[in-house]
Image 1: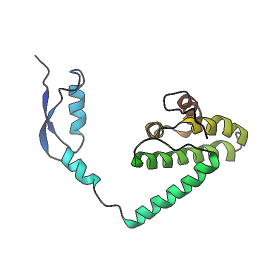
Image 2 (image 1 turned 180 degrees about the vertical axis):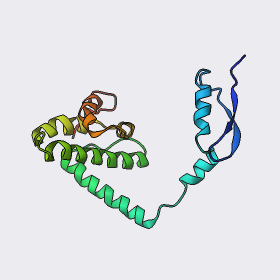
Image 3 (image 1 turned 135 degrees about the horizontal axis):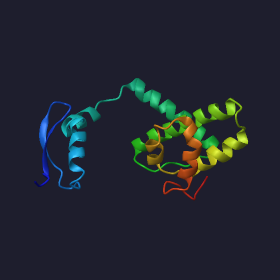
Amino acid sequence: MSIPKVWNIDYACGHSGEMDLSQKRIDQRAGYAKWLEKRDCFECYKSKGTKKISKEREQERAEELEKVAVQEKRDGLLPLSGSEKQQEWARTLRGEVLAGLYDLYVTSEEHDEEWFDSEVLTPARMIATSRWWIDNREFELPAFPELLAAGAQSDDASENVA
């Protein structure tokens, strides 16, 4: 029995359609088809993404990014690569993580400012991709000193530290 290239997908939005999965390896097609069934079809997904953001939420985002910009300047953080949306999201995530780590380790007096600078800020300054911050957003704060050290040694790092 050959593995099909075209699969019938019943999407979560209620639509159905055929999806050509010939670009996927044959051992990935069934899993990918199952994953697609948990998602909206492309048209529904696209229409949800075009919703207008309220003026209030737009203002909140602008204020959040202003606060993040102040923190980035204070901490000597690099701009991040990625699309504009990725950069905004990753900058916000980075700000939340660094503020959380400061509270967790310095405010609680578990470590001092010098430790925070060397073990948290120095590697954070080296991570230059939005993707890194987005990919690691699900980790708990105590994991970040180790994650940051690894990230500073990865392809996501930059030698041009501010």
